Amino acid sequence: AQSVTQLDSHVSVSEGTPVLLRCNYSSSYSPSLFWYVQHPNKGLQLLLKYTSAATLVKGINGFEAEFKKSETSFHLTKPSAHMSDAAEYFCVVISSSGYSTLTFGKGTMLLVSP
Amino acid sequence: ETGVTQSPTHLIKTRGQQVTLRCSSQSGHNTVSWYQQALGQGPQFIFQYYREEENGRGNFPPRFSGLQFPNYSSELNVNALELDDSALYLCASSFAGDTYEQYFGPGTRLTVT
Image (cartoon, rainbow over all chains, first blue to last red; front, side):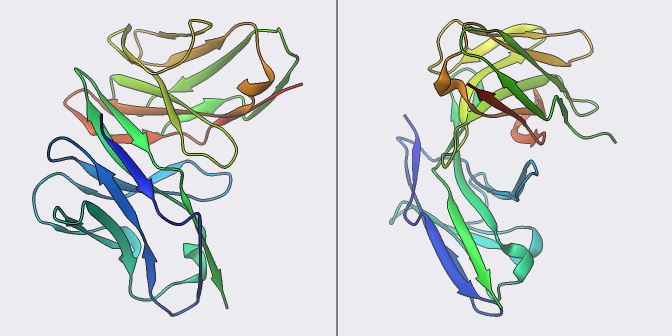
């Protein structure tokens, strides 16, 4: 079965500094991976997705993630944090067992200080 | 284009009661999935509906049931509520040909006392 592990429950950065949110995956075959963001009192929003095309994936709001098969990782990065980036981020793998469902990591809360 | 909507926003129920949560899919989407998000956790898959039939189910007991209607809106029903059912319930719609992209509603916050 596919699964993802988010290595940090909380990450704190200062505005204008780089963001790194770490995710490792476990899959018996080449997975499809996603990052979702959840702002308070708002629905989950898709940031970016990897579906076995280019290994460096660009998403919305300046985020990007790199799929590294050798390290079974799919870390999310952003060169410069903005206050509005403060939210919870979920690394997600899609499971295909006759139907496609999303398996979420436990989430990483990103805190951005001025 | 209308996004995914859910009702109600918040709900308080007593242990043992039954609850119905509702979801309207995004226009053009024919598949709906429900997720339970406990406090401090990632969402967990409950079940998925396609063409009014349950298409897949996660590790949830039968007292969690659902319906999908011809207009692709959906209901989640939970019987015999337990305290551990307190959570944010999320609905996500997608198109069967591209279930990789699921669009989430804002959720219903259920509190069981």
